[in-house]
Length: 264
Ligand code: SF4
Image (cartoon, rainbow, N blue to C red; front, side, top):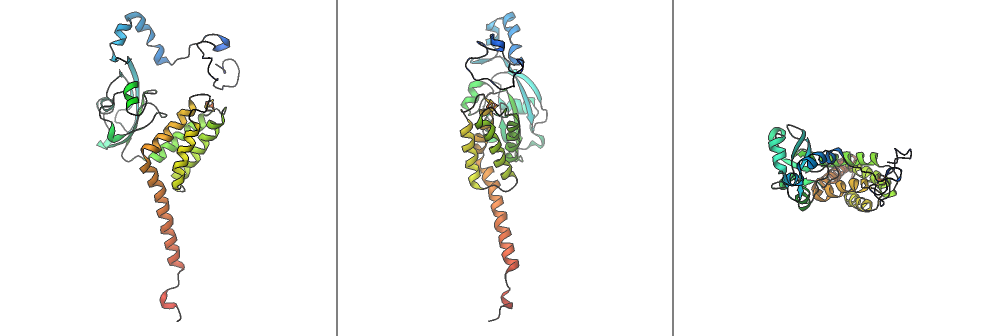
């Protein structure tokens, strides 16, 4: 709306919401195309018809964009409440090489990730995913197999949100940059154990303290990926520590005077 009005494209502080006070002060509807395309069939066929599709508390169909380690990535329109495992294995053709799944992000890159060993029975609708500790978000399902480096995945996600931050509020502008720096440090083998807690602390300080939802969108993947896959992050910083110790021992050995050469 700000861009259309010729202003800098900053998100607006709400309330007032666009439905009350939007473009040039008029009531404005802002929705995605997926939502608006549901309107004509609901008007033509009635709400009872629409409510009979999918889960009663979140009826209708959703466009699930499946990407990552699946044989048939694509967009699948399915009723809400379809099992996540059915979408991955029945519709998207399963995981290449029949590898195990390490992680699935069920609702786009900002939604909390799920562990691959806990996917059974999870339905793709708002309530079921909330109960599973995630959220339906955009319905963008990202599948990662057992060989995926989750630290690198998170660094890539953090890079996206840092780039997308408009810079209007300090926690998002600075925090997204700090999280990216910390993650890159761990990816480059220069991270320390304290960096893992620092990541969560920065994410917590962004959450709830910004003008628009991009703040949470940037904070949640970091907070939940680190919390749910802490072993991966610990391993990444321990590898660095092990390498440092090995190098130190090696340099001590190469500079030490052989015992046979010591004059007594
Ligand atoms: S949360 Fe981020 S993207 Fe949203 S207004 Fe603040 S700085 Fe801009």
